[in-house]
Image (cartoon, rainbow, N blue to C red):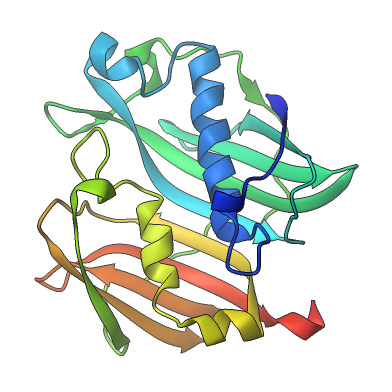
Length: 244
């Protein structure tokens, strides 16, 4: 699926440019819109089948931030050797120049039993998979503990954090994890890579703690429940702004 889009001020960072956070909004819009075009989106399958899509991983690489000039968005479903797992690829470009590339991993969950479901449980079409892959590295393995990490701050899950399934919506974690750093960090650095893994759900009223740690692969940032279990973890790659 391809579309043209004009970036909006609400999607920009404080430099009035769209970066990874804004691009991830486009990613979700394209992924959900693509599923909607053939009737298998989260707007219909919970009522039709009692099943919903659960996003498990995001990965995005930024080449360049965007101003307000129109951009091109393209998404497709990659062939994968993992049964029951869907990989949606995304490319953001302008005039043939790639601005960002990414991949979303998702699976189907039976709402009542909270167990994984297979694509044929929602009569998912078999002719939508493309033998074409996003030019991004494979997903990496992220730790499920906060051992050795530095505490950053605490967030209480509120109403505006929630989605239809009554847990914290997936892109809300992006801002929470980014807020492990202050504005001075982002004025000096640009995020070039962001890989986010969802491990367990956060619910209204929970106090969740954000941790960070600098590693050779980038900044590891995690969101943890009160019992210490990790709800989500991300690895964030940055580069000094004057070197990009």
